[in-house]
Length: 256
Image (cartoon, rainbow, N blue to C red; front, side, top):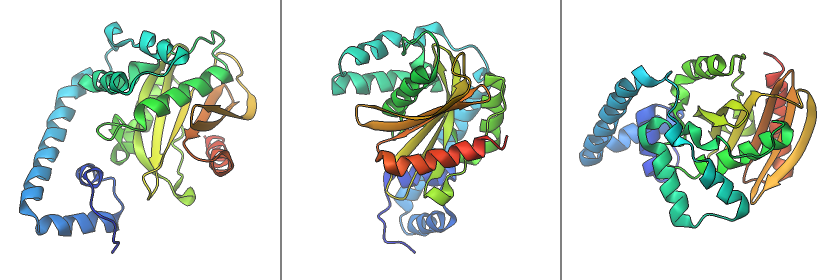
């Protein structure tokens, strides 16, 4: 039993079944004593199932070009968006569950190399990590389906890193469309709510490149490429803390 307060994030994670068993049991006990909250949570579960059924037929359809937000992202390269615009952009992205198209046209590096991948990962983090409504398209409970989905779309086998030994658990993932083709994004968090994002995609150049550090604003990261696939792990953590985790991701990716 922990003494952590039960938050709205916990309640949503309870519905999605992504909490550790002890925390899941704590919230179940809490709901037994709070019928009003339990009724609201039951509504969440019903909405989740309705959304899943409604979106299932279009999951593999081409994403519409009108969701191309390249101008917004390009504007962020020249200046930071005001907070209100950033929120509005995220709301637009979340409509219809098709928000993975945010990255298309975001990076101007036409080579599609490691520098472009690093920027794409940092932008993915800046857009999705602060989102407490729908940061991922598919939750950790659907990890097998998630891996199959992104592997099919990338036309490459994708390994889902296990970062539990580093203190981070999988939240889920989504597809991100970039100027250099689709990428898979996986998100993780720890007990403090700190989040990491791992982005991977086939590389047009730099198909094999050693690990290099990068940073953008307050987002630190490490990027590398191996066997034609590029990887970047990013987060708002110190680089010296992030590098061992990046090394673990690289080690696991090589076991595909």
